[in-house]
Image 1 (cartoon, rainbow, N blue to C red):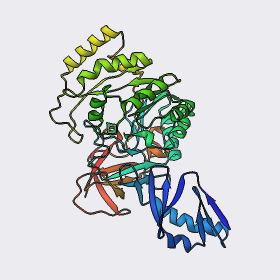
Image 2: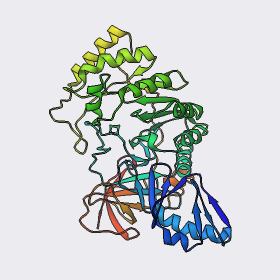
Image 3: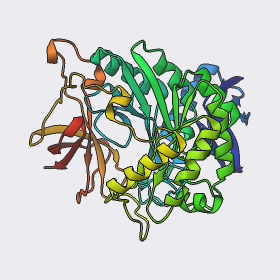
Image 4: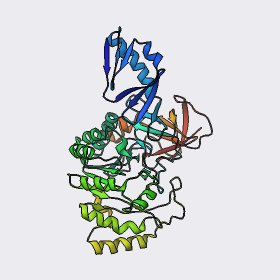
Amino acid sequence: MATLTFDDLRFHRKDSNTVVVEFLGNYSFEVDAKALSSIGTYSLGESSIEFRNVSEQEARNSFNAILNEGLGDLTNSTTRKKTLYVHRYSGIPLLGTTSFGIIDRNTNMIEVRPITGCNMNCIFCSVDEGLASRKTSEVIVDEKYLAAEVRKLVEFKGCECHIIINSQGEPTLYKPLPELISDLKAVTAVKTITLITNGTLLTEKLIDKLAASRLTAMNISLNAIEPKAAKIMEGFGGYDVEKVKKMAAYAAKTTIKVTLAPVIVGGYNDAEMEKIVQFAKEIGAAVGMQNYLFYKRGRNPKNAVQVPWERFYAELDALEKKHGTKLIFEAADYEIIKTRPLPKPFRKGQTVKAVVVAEGRYLKEYIAAANPVAAGLHGRQLPTCAEGRIITLPDCEKKLAAGEKIKVKIVSDKHNIFYGEVV
Ligand code: SF4
């Protein structure tokens, strides 16, 4: 008899022919029951599977084959979209795209994006995430792989760094978030870690775990105080603003610095600005208001107006004076400094060899990986994350298959974020 037990998997039977395997809470794949029976007579536990009349080694080898196939066929349970699992052995680098992984804009602030996908549906979402997103797929990155690659980048920079976990989506949907924060904080040069969240999935237990993992700050996008306005802003009738307020108040009592960070959409929630400042004062949180901006690929609500910057700052200034709360911030407030730039392994205009790794997040989009060896740049062996890059191939008319070798002309390379065309 062999009992295989897993930390990240949960099993349940869908029907007599199908077993559902849940991965990291929010992802799943289905297994044909016959494939499991072919290993041996089996029974399911919540996070284990027991095979009779087979050795542990045999059971493990056979089940791993099923697992590998399943992890290549994940579905996100929140958005019901197929999901790409990016791990150390996937051949997918973590630099090169804004969708997931690591974004380095040559400063000591590193953006870390462990997942895509969101449980809300904000009417102003600049990255078009959430339940009504037009994107066709999701991504999840293995925690250990992500933490290790961030560490290499921080070490390459050779200075104190600030990490912002700001997924194109909701990062609290990422089950190993406390472990990720803990592993990043273990890097000596990581000074602060800030989490950007919509706050809907926060619980006292999760907040305690995040504080224990040494999260420095949490920006909660509380966009309105009045329930009706809040539901409209979040684009979701089930949004519970009272719960988010309660969790913000709880978090503000821990070691985590809480900032309420609403997006102000003219004509929608400008009347809520003062109420948000008042609530922040009550719970001891800071406020970082953002002005709504029109994004071509984002969601832009009907009749929404971008408040002119002059008026936006005048309103912040008036509220600052009235409530004695700092609302206007400058670059110097964030301790952001320029760092030596991470070399670009290739440049705009160059043609490079790459491998298609998956369909992209939009229709007719693909993700390719190019892994030129960049050893020796700047006189030192660069970490592996500096060697490979993702290249996004948007609006690709040609049908490509994962694993296909292609040549790509780089059309954009800003900040090591690459877009290309198949040639
Ligand atoms: S919570 Fe953030 S990512 Fe999610 S829909 Fe709203 S703005 Fe977009």
